[in-house]
Each structure stands twice: as C-alpha cells, then as structure tokens.
Image 1 (cartoon, rainbow, N blue to C red):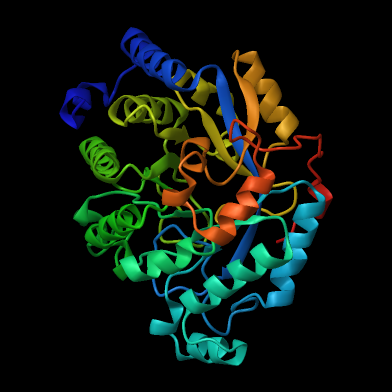
Image 2 (cartoon, rainbow, N blue to C red):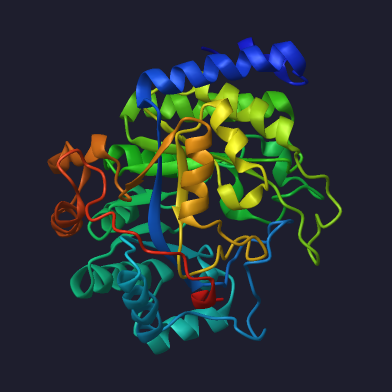
Length: 384
C-alpha cells in the first residue's frame, strides 16, 4: 500500500478509526498471531555527550556539566552483571553521536580510555560484554558508514537507528532537528541502507509530534518499507510519541494524544510489510494496552534494572503488568531476544560468529528466549 492511500485518516475518529484499527489488527494476527513480545534488557548509556542538539532531548550533557562523559569498563560491567542476575539477555548501548568531532574534551576522554573514536570504544565494550557475560549487545550508535556497520555487526546481535522523520523541514532554524548534522534525513537513510548491505538485523522507527505533518509521517513509513523491501533487514519499527520535557526548546510543544498514536500505529501496520514487527513503548502512555488494538506485536525493551535514559521521567511498567494488560486484550506475552527468530533462522547471513554463539545459548528451538523464569521487576534497583 502507498502512503497516499492513508491521507484521509489524519483526523480519523469514530467508525472510520475503528475500521482502520480492525484492519491493522487483522494484519497483525495473520502475521504474528495473538502474541506480543518484549526483550528483557539493560540500558547502557555509554556516553551522554553528543554533537547534535535536538530540541526535545534531555539525555545529552555538555562537557563540564555534572555527570557528563563516558562510562568506564567497570561501570559497564557492573550494569551488565546485575542485569544478568535479574534475567536480562540484551545489553542496549545508547549514546550520543560522535561527540569527539565537536568537543575536544570528548576526544581527550576517549584518549584517556585508550581509544580514538566513540565507535572504537563502543565496539570494544560490546566485545567485553560478549566475552564476560551472557548478554548480547544491541547498538544505537547513530549514523554510520557501511564499514562502520560491519564492525558493529561483529559484536552485536542487532543495531538501531531511528529515522524519526524523512522531512528536511525539521532541520531548519527553529525546528526540532536544527543544528543536528546527524539528523539530516539522507544520512539516516544511508545508514539504514548500510545496515541492509551488511545484513544487520535493524530497528528503526518514527518519532511523532515533533513538528512533522501527517503526510510526512506516511512518507517516512513508506521510506522504511522501501528499504526493507530492498534488503530485508528491518526487523522492527517503533512508533514513538514525543513527550515534552522541561528545560528543552520544545518544553511547551503539544504532545500527541492517544488517538493520534492509534491512527499512526494502524497506518504503520498497514504500510509496512507484515514481516516487520511493530513496536510502541509502554512507558510513554498510561493506556498503553490500547496500542494492541492498532496492530502492534511488540513492547520493545523493558528493564528490571535501568531507567529509560531517553525518557527518565517515565518508569517502566512491570513485566507482569504488561502481561496482564496484554492478556486482557487476548494477547499472550512472550520474551524474545535482541535478534528476532526470523533472523536467527538465517544465522550465517545475519549474525557474526561471536554474537551468534551467544544467541544460540539463549534461544529456544522457536527462536524466542529460553528460561523465561519469573524475574520480578525491581524498582529499587533502578540505575540513573
């Protein structure tokens, strides 16, 4: 389906919206059944320095601010070991983009750690996690070349890069991505294509409510679909709702409401190939179970240990709560790994030797996660 077919749903409500949701849920059921997945993970904010200045971000710090810098190897492994004790299987590395290109202080910090670039350090930390724990890294490193993506593949089960939106308007003065060289859409597209050329199982998605039009949302989803149709490597797409944060340029910007999320999720399900998992974060809405009505089949990463460092004010719901609300909608919750079963079934193409061995130890015969013993969420263990 083309994006233009869904232009009329921009303000869909009532019967029109209900029919849209029904179509999306039917497509989900045909491809994924009555199952929703999640990944039990720890979040590792390897650096909160970044050369971009997004209008909605509170994750990034400037050199000299309290807490600004890089986590050391001991700090990384402390998070990983505690996560392993709590049954986590994924180590999600989230970090700012190429801060050493903007800040001499960042370059000096890297030299003190023994590395030239943030990429070098990230690859080394991922290898350390694979060699000294049972967790498998997922890397959100930002824009990369094909050669850089090939390096990441050697030490991770998957990679992520949010497209956010394909519109170049958003990089203009006063818009959400002004002064963000890594948010220029063509750079994001090139990175997603590089991941495809290297056969890296990839997460991408759109961020809604940052000043884009409905048409631009649809065009962004269509662009993702086209990349996947060419390379087949997009394993999941996230539709994430903007949340306004005090102290940012967009602190007073209007947030998408639940109906807007439902419309967008439903058209995403209908535009995207059925094989792509559709995800929405459960910690960014009090009524997250409604997303199941719009055709999602995945809740993303949920951590019993670490906060959502991108939205630290939004605590993770307990896995038991997600399972209960899903079951109320007739959907069974299943734990997955960072690499989806369809990609685990083609290991020589989609995984390198080191992460492949780790994934095999964690996977059931059907590709989902082994040992789904009950590990209660531990709010007291939250790491900021």
